[in-house]
Image 1: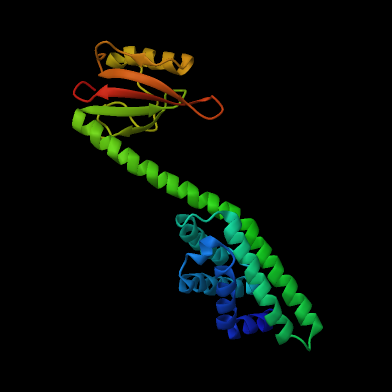
Image 2: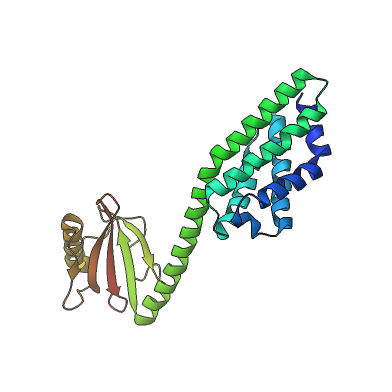
Length: 247
């Protein structure tokens, strides 16, 4: 049954992709603004992923196709419901092809319709996560770009930034890894020697959440430290700023 369904999808790929694209293109203003050829290209990729999913119910390729489509659509202002509607249109296009191809085999028809509907609804379920992953990746790229600009400014001004968790384990530092010498990413902030005064100041920031601002840099160059909290009000990071020449 799987092989017959795959054969039908392969034989009618052009027909399905063309009709799918035409209907999707007319389903919303956002789709209408896209070149029809791009919509058809996405539909053709979905048909290919459907063929794979039919064979072994391996949704890896389907997820990758959805991820690519989501990235393209999100960049154009689409929301998950727009793309979900497009997937349902695909299901509506495929079913008549199956009815015609398996008109003389009721068992094959029922099995094929059930398999396609299950895969398409699985696609819609996956779509929300795909959009979340895509948005998270875009936000991370923006954060990396912003961090790069900030590091460039800090380096030019002669400053080093160090972030720690609530236990003062170093999470990251920049712009120059190791500029603070014995302050090592992934290890606790040192508590001896010239780090003693800074350690006490950082512990106070972590404990109280109140910022620390030095009138003059401490012995290790600490200028200020602030607490960053998450959406639930819990301590996320203690971020400290140092004068690199003294760090």
